[in-house]
Length: 217
Ligand code: CO
Image 1 (tube, protein in one colour):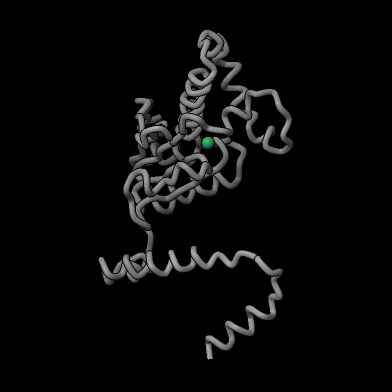
Image 2: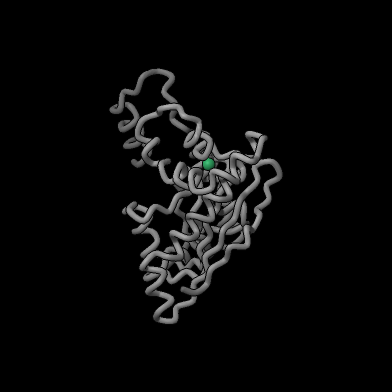
């Protein structure tokens, strides 16, 4: 019955020939779920009950920076917010909702802002080309650039200058997170939260701690 219904549905959609049905991804998904259950029969049942991750990851949307994979964490262990160039803008309702939920409801112990070297968003912010809406999104990075102009312009190599801007951007976002009222209020009521600034290297897969950790007002 289910199969017949599925066939009818497939026909009814009348997709153009050659339209990718992403069958390989669905097959991957079935294999992944089966492997999880084979290794731990109660895996999904447990997660269904609740999520209680200790960490909030604020990272770039870049496909080469898969949050869970990099730090070897399973589903249920990492609360993730990703956007272009790992920003934490204090007026962005999406980021703020994630932050408040992570702090007030899930009560994560650690928040890591994770930039990455070779970030296209960082490069696009300062290359002078017009792209449209994303130019507005990337505006905070141009502010970071102008606040650190002397240091950045003293770096002659383009790539190294952008890498430094990636780091300075993480610093700024760590400051945004740590100064946010949700985090400040949590600290005021004695809730432990530590905010970290990391940069991930695409070339070797390693995370570098920028040592800008904040754990109090
Ligand atoms: Co990026």
